[in-house]
Length: 229
Image (cartoon, rainbow, N blue to C red; front, side, top):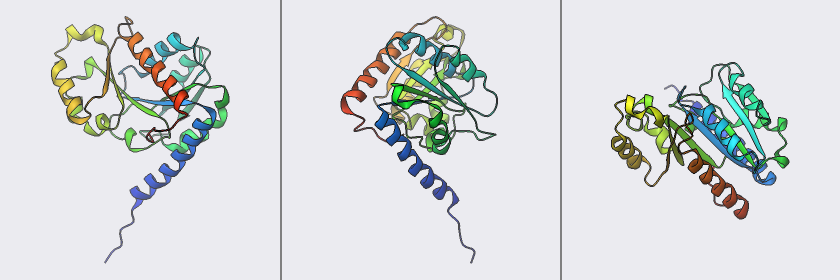
């Protein structure tokens, strides 16, 4: 009888161990880290640039970008005078803890308050691989449709916050807000939810205020009580 090799379990176990090491580095440096995930085109980089513009005067921000190829997004963020590190995954559809571990020496964690990680555009597997960060954020968008919580439940279950971007085009799409919210609540009751538009600025302040509150809480608690993400 053939023996089964638990490859997936081994990969996830190894990833978990490295994620804990990453978390230790963040907490030793007092760095609050978030992981932004979304499908391609939902507005990850747009939200990141708006966040930096609204908060860089208050907090020291650093950025890690995960992409299959190119440094287009990292170059955009670097123009905002933020330390930026590019990770090209070479075809992998998500970031993992080892990729983050290799990127960290290129950042001055002792001079960073907020680390923003932009994951690869994908709604399937990013939440399965812990990075060591403190909060997972999923960016949905109006043009994607209102059925995504039902079609990609794993992503919506594995996050702490939902940002619904591109509210400025809501009237142009058959997007049922109640149906979308119902799908989110079934999977993740009480989830923080921010409808906004990076184009018009609607709702961005509320998102930034939530992030400020999270950073202050983290600094007060010293990193305790955060589930590994």
